[in-house]
Image 1: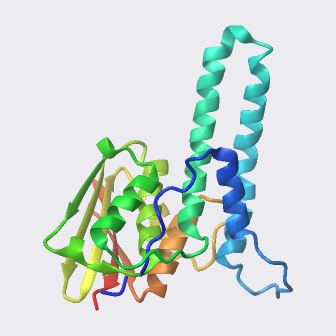
Image 2: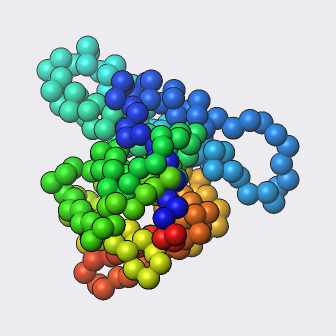
Length: 242
């Protein structure tokens, strides 16, 4: 199977500020002349989305921290709010990291390792996620970093927008394809499908991960399909098993 070298798991353990700086350095676009009809690159879309979505949380965090010294009687409440804002910002960074950035070669790995790395990078609590690798699919060689990005984006999207609902991840092989299926209840199917069908990146981080999933899947020669049975929504990424 040609699925190629994976990015390492979460690289932003050293702190929010360093993580933000690393993302901006990795994705900052070079200025160039473009026509009005030319679609923005992934890097351009990512920087634009980060600027759009991080403005309010950063302003809120700054105001919260500034209030700590003035209202010590509300310190516990303010600290809880600050922690919530930093968790939200960290989630944005995970989405940005999975959407773009430099590809790092780490040699051949197997799908089992890629799944574990994506789970660690997504921030999704292990108690909320059930992963199943069917048959020998865990031993499939993977040589493309986009496979881990696709998985991380799907898991991060379930974490940010799933309302805490349980998530099921199933990897299997079938008739020349490796299938990565993510199932979660309570998902607004029409909204997810809309993000998958768009050909242009959204202006903010909402939907950017799903847009990236369908784009990177097509680049790998694969396809994205979905099913909604009225109870749970299942999104399946099918990649060629060569």
